[in-house]
Each structure stands twice: as C-alpha cells, then as structure tokens.
Length: 279
Image 1 (cartoon, rainbow, N blue to C red):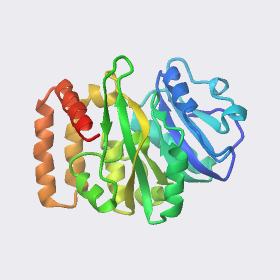
Image 2: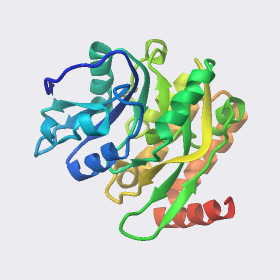
Image 3: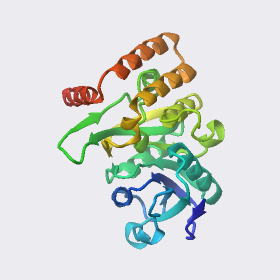
Image 4: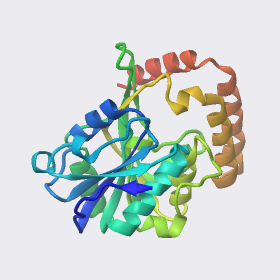
C-alpha cells in the first residue's frame, strides 16, 4: 500500500472514503459534487489496483474546491471490502476526524448533503449512523427510481430485516463507532456494508434524513448487479446473524428467496413503479 505524500489537515469534520477501481472519470465526477466548509473535509481515495493508477495531481485543486484529497494505492486488486478497510485504517492512522462518509465513483452528492448531515449529527448526539434518501439513475437512459426508507431508529431496526436501509454512498457515521464494532467484516462478501451497519445499530441509534441527498449510478457491470444472487444469499446470512426478531427474520428469508428467483429487470421495473407511487 502506498499513499501520495501530501499535507494532512487536522482536525476535520468529515472524511469521505471513496474506493476506486478503473473508473477515474466517475471518481472525478463524484469529487466535483462534494461541497462543504473550506478545509473542514477531506477525501481519501483508495485506488484498488487500477491498471492505470490514480494520481494525486489529477485530483481537484484544494485551493479551488476547498478540500484536500489523499490517494492511497493498493498495488493488487483484492476486492471492495479490503479496499474499504485499508481506507479506514489509513484514516485512523493519519487523520483526526469526527465523521466518516462514503461515496462510490460516479455517485453524486446534492450540494447541501454534508452540511445537512453534519448539522443533524451535531444536534443529535444519540445518533451514530446517518443516511439519507437517494435517487438511483441509469446514465445511459432515462430510467431512474427513488429509494425512500423509514427515518427513525425503531422503525429502521425493524426494516433492516428486509433491506439495507442505509444505502452505502449516503452514509455518514461517527468515527468513534469503529472502536466499538470494528471495520467492514471480511466474511460477508457483497454485503459488508449491510453487516457493518446492522452491527452499528446494536451499539448506537440510527437515523435517515428524509431528503434526496445523493444520486447513485445504476451500473450493469457493478458488483451489486453482477453478483446479485450471491448478494441475496449474503443478506440472508446478515439477517440470521444480526436480526433481533425471530418472526421478522423468518419473513425476511422468504422474501429473499423469492428475489433470487425473479429476474433483476423485473425487480427494477417494480422499484420504479413503487417509487413513483410514493412521490
């Protein structure tokens, strides 16, 4: 693992962790969407063995965008969970930061995202894990759907049996939580975020801002789609391990088994229609 040498700014409000594999254009789009108080946020990009390395000099100018970017290079691609944990370890060793955020390459933040999320956590000390509603969009077509969820802790905890309420690129959490729950669990491939957030909810309260603060790209070649059946099996394992209600766990497992049978394009059509009916 190698990190580009650059000055470390401390203390910070927010560090945005962005894994990147062979998607420099998407990475730049994501970085350009980030807005926050000058010099109170930084981005940590984990280049997970991209054939053409991500270079620090290609990142946005901190004098213009108002935040610094640190690039950590992993020479050999070992998967998203490893990349995320390398990032968390680097953040722990090099930064003093209050909150850790996530973003994936090509996903876009609403200009108010980090202002709104940091303000909420500053005012609600009992909340450790915060997400938001989001829009899923296919950039190659006009297809999109909205993803809305419960917003209060009690309802979130119940709903987590049926889906991951916290869409990964919408999340902001208190860095101190990592001391209580550890990093992304390596034994839950394709659902490492689901497992981590479920673990967090057993240690802190969670909340969702009922605002569309992130636009997530639908990528037909992305891990969630190409490994969909394995991901659904992983979700079943997470529910079995971390679910708190025997009844809800039973119902959730039946739903997941049905989803494994349905073609993904049918699932997308249903999501699109349901999201329109909720507007």
